[in-house]
Image (cartoon, rainbow, N blue to C red):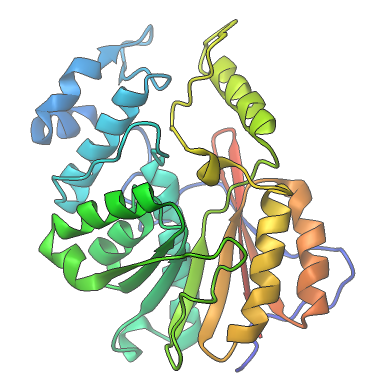
Length: 310
């Protein structure tokens, strides 16, 4: 397998930085509420004018955020039946679309052009009840997906979303992971090939840390002295935290990926915290993998995409 990126360094990091949305991202700029309300009237009950006379919603209200997502998927992708159970992760669609478009750019660079490969196949580790990455990848690029999930309720919810749309049903296969110790094992079948694996890992190291992160998020949204933890984007425990946080989770991905390097062209993961990068690069060096990092900055939010291959 050829190397596209080779970085000879102990800890200096070559990071491609972006300060705006990917050019192909449909969600650049502010939300187009007139467009959303026209195609999805159910959103109207949550929309109001703020002090600057701009239309917005209360982003601390989980039902409002969920309805906004449903409106976005309906207006921009023609998917009208998306839903998730209460308390499950409700993803910010513009940011999730960024991941998909950067993956497309990487694959285009890898293959010269996406048209040279008949069918791109992607593995989403931890597809979640929302099934958002496969949904976006299918509607934007006609990719095929396998989505793995360890939580049975999330698995069933994702299956409901896929089964409600024929295009999704034809291009997304969901597989239940029965082992808490494995990610790729039991999911990737013998002789099965993937162009890339993607993952949005739980990044907190404990439930308490997740709660503290939620409090900070709520404060940023203007919710002061809130005694009840309310996640504006939802999230059950398995979606928000794991022992060791994102470093432990992604490190496990890295070491397990060694055994599947002949079946996957690229591996990748979202990395939430800047300080997580250095320890992850140590692990990548140990397994002799090359890597690429893309830093995405949108407003005050900064996240990273880590790609690696052998």
